Image (cartoon, rainbow, N blue to C red; front, side, top):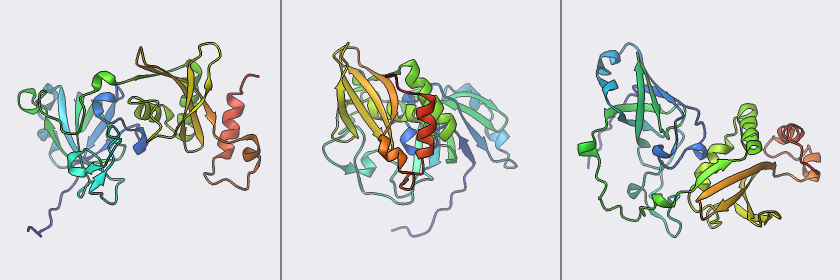
Length: 272
C-alpha cells in the first residue's frame, strides 16, 4: 500500500457562467456554445507549454471538483434510476480525490487564456492539467458501456417560450439563479419521470389538451409541456412557489428570497 502523499499544484483556474452544480449538463457535449476561459497561472513558462495547442479542435481538461468535500462509494447517476452503482463506474463528482476530466472544444488560445466551449466545468474550478484529444487513440465508439444505455437518440430538446426565456434571464441577472440550465439538465432525459425529480402534473392545457408539468427548484416552479413525437420539452413559464398568504408572511423567510419573489411577480404579472 502506497502511503506517500502526492502533491498536485493547480496550473490555473476556470472562468465560467456555470456557478452551481445544478447548472451543469451531464456531459460537456450537451452544454452548447457558451464559452468558458481557462486562465493559466503567470510566471511558470506556461506560454511555451501552450505552443501548438491551438492546432487541436478538442482538448482534455483535468480539474478539481472544488465544491465537493467528501466522497461516496455508491452514487445514483442521473440516467440510471433503479439502483446505485460504484462511483468508479461513473463520472460523478463524489470521488476520493475529487478529480474531474472533460473533453472540451478548443476555441482559441490567447496568451495564458484558453477559450473553450461544450464545457461542463464549474466556475472557479482549479485546473490540474491539459492534454490534446487524439481521435485515433481516444475514441472507441463501439466499446461496451456497462450500465449506461446508448440512448442519445432519446434526448429531448428543451425550448423556451419567449416569456419563459425572459423570466429566466431576469432571474439570472437579478439573483444569479440559472433556471434555464437547471431545466435543460433535469428535463433532457425522461422529462415526465417523477421518481427522481421534483415533477408533478399541474393541469391540462384547454386549447392543446397537453398535460402541463411542473418542475420545482427550491421556491421556484418551471411549467412545461412535453411532445413525445417531436422529442421537445417546451418551457411555458416560470412561477413563484409561494402562495399569496406565504408571501405576506415576511417573518417566515427560510430562503430569504420573498422580496425577490415580490419583484418577480411585479415584473411578470399573471394575466387574469
